[in-house]
Image 1 (cartoon, helix red, strand yellow):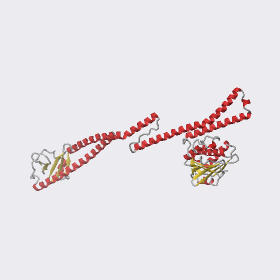
Image 2: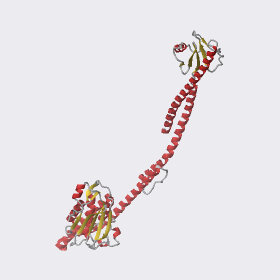
Image 3: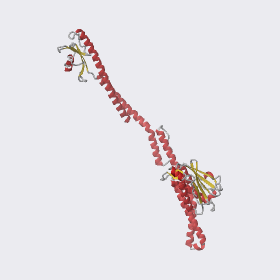
Length: 456
């Protein structure tokens, strides 16, 4: 319909313009011919006289002529149809009071009359106004327009159906995926241009959904596996307490020291479950966060994380050597990552050896290093240190879920940074995080908190 309407409008406008141009051209041609014929007749009348100039018999078609004598009478060829009476304007031409005159009566059925003064009289040449060429042209344009409109509608319908066929198939495939929840059924890549890009985009979306579903499935399976051990231990200890309490032998079977140790184990298991639940929530959220990105001093984030770590590990000393480095990031997420690094180091560091945290600028990067004096990381475990739920054989007996360092890598990756593992100078593990450094908010603030500023 749009194509047909556009063609109809185009044909109508073209017809109007062409008709106007043709009308002007026909008028100009007819007037030029009248001028030429009147001058020929005037030349003959000037030689022979108005009363004696020969007027051949009217042949039935062609020009009409008339001679106006000085007294106002007229002469016309034999058999010629009567012309309209001499007008007042024509009489003024005969009297010499007006220049040559072209008069036109009604264009549809009247005459065009050209009056040219000769001596004391005048000659007139006229033709019958004929608009048949315009009518024939208009009829032809009408037929052409109708043909073009019909053809345009047919072609437009065909093109629309052909162009929308891939959309229909794409819609049917998308509906099928939505109804069956089968994300493995890729939509056939067909068509071209925008259709192909749309199909590829939907297939990419399905691939992302499949990966997301697979990640959720793996997360659920890993979480179930990690929850099994602390829940089993917790259930056995609680069942033991309930069974002894029912028998009334709780105090005799479990001395005070044993009960205290059992309750301590229960508390540790509950704390481990709480930590695991928190970390599972962090992992399940992925990169979804309502926290906005802002320009922050990473030193403030590290100091805040160290303060929280000291309250959680009162027996482990945390030493800071940090310089002011500005980065663009999410403060809470970065603090969580730094806290996980310090917590991990605190599990391995001996009680008499502090966890050392250093923050410095290295080229265009902000470099954070956390090292401990523990046994270090085996070469076989280095590639998987930041993997989700991965725990080295030597760490299985320690509290933790294997999620802390995976959260660190996810946060660092989201900020365009890098993670690394090396051996500390003290023999333990050296975990490194590099983040793109940013310009400070103002020169004055940068100078006030420059590279020489350290927090111990």
